[in-house]
Length: 194
Image (tube, rainbow, N blue to C red; front, side):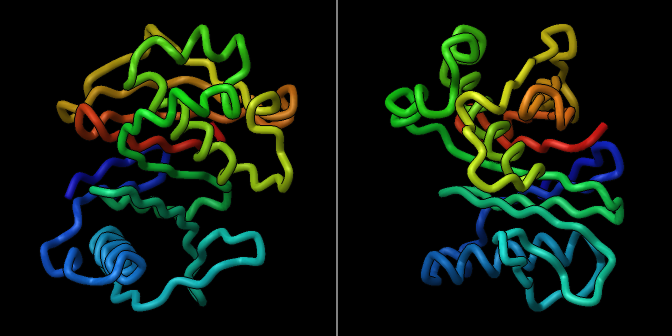
């Protein structure tokens, strides 16, 4: 399991265990999330609740969480900070090129549609921003603007990390992001108030 601390938020990323892979998809994902969450917190957590908007929370615990899973990995973020944050993990899929017009403006495409990894980063940052701001009905193509800080591309724990900011609804929400290439085909991004 890879563990990162970003602005007071602990992030854990892991692959599914062989035992988890034997389960039905929903059960596999649930068990993996609980396993990673328990390792991050040191607590025996057996259930995750969901708010009306679908965001996860832990009953009777003063911790904020965000959860994501993809075909090969699960990611969990946890913090005692009161600020909302969002997390997304995805594997590259060629379909991202087919739907890029739905989540990137024309200006955004000139920045993010440069290669598979950058397009995957854009998708995960957009998803994580959506989770962080929790605005129902937001126009993800036009209301979320992601600005990479090209001077801030770095390697942290041998993982290529791209940092920058997300602006929602013309700067009503100013957020920072970290986008980490866990593998050449898998990216995890976290968006948070800086």
